[in-house]
View 1 (cartoon, rainbow over the protein chains, first blue to last red):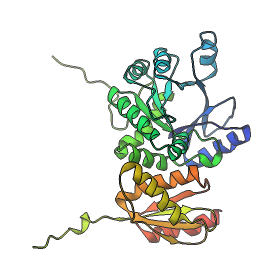
View 2: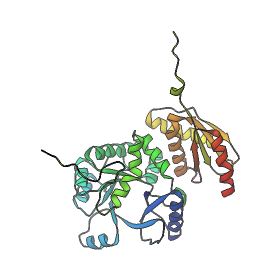
View 3: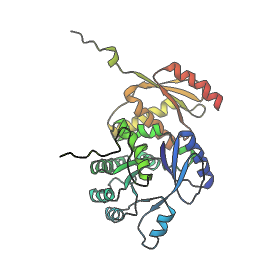
View 4: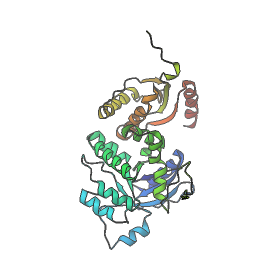
Amino acid sequence: MYADLIAPRSFDDCLKMVERARYLGYGMLGILGDFKIESDIVKTYKVALINRIDPKSRQKLRMESKLILAKPSSLEDARKLTFSSLVDGVIATYDSERPRIDYVSLKQLKRNEGALVIPLSYLIRKMCERAQVIRSVYLELKMAMRIGVYPILCSFASEERELVPPRLMISFSEFFFDLRREESKRFVKDFPMYMLSEERKLKLKGRGEFEVQSTD
Amino acid sequence: MKFKVPIDLKERRRYICVKHPDGYPILDRTKRALAMIGGLKCLSYSKISVISLNRAISVIRTSESSVKAVLTAILILKYTECSEIDVIGLSGNLRKIREICPEVQEGK
């Protein structure tokens, strides 16, 4: 089962996108914005995007949204946002040539079991205007992988037509980020599921569920 | 002395079946997108050809190592130029791709 995040503009768009997601094989869909859709086959949940943490609305935000993502505007901002356990994920710097997420922020994100989210549609549009933006995403991705923060690739589609099959997303990350196919597949399949699971536990194929105890 | 390349080491062909708007110049646009991403990655991809099954469905023929680049190029075209492009299928066998085509047209 695949999971994706979308950012619809209207309720009608949202309805069409849920239907198309079902056709493309997605089982879960995170919706950015105030759209509530009930579907039997595609499980939907609410996603919130924040720029700063407001202590007053903290509780309310957590109650309303299953997933809280942050979009930092500077390096300092990223450190502040990732310090809190409220943030489940940080959007990669897709609109600037310089990364806004550094080693410290990613370490904090790792501590809070957060993830690095790469918005595909935003990144491609920006990349066609300014090719250098791919460099900052690449750097952040490599740092995240080294630290152990899980990177997630999602479409962030705003129209029905922008939802793409998972296969194309896998090829994209495989090609641009020089990854092996299994690594690339985890970005699209396993890691999004990890971020949505309650216990934040990664269930990979072939990995034993029980830990091996030392016998010394 | 001649060095013979074993047959299984030769690159296999891959066929990508693509649905697009009527008369869309898929070869030119894909080549342009490939040149753009090739520039970003310091690579060049020229070995692609297009077999037109009808005005709305084409098959892109490429090598196995270039498949991910071609799929990325199609994805870029989908987000930047024409959002109605869809990848219907991918195979190493042209016959299978031709078999998919009538099914797609029936489902339309």
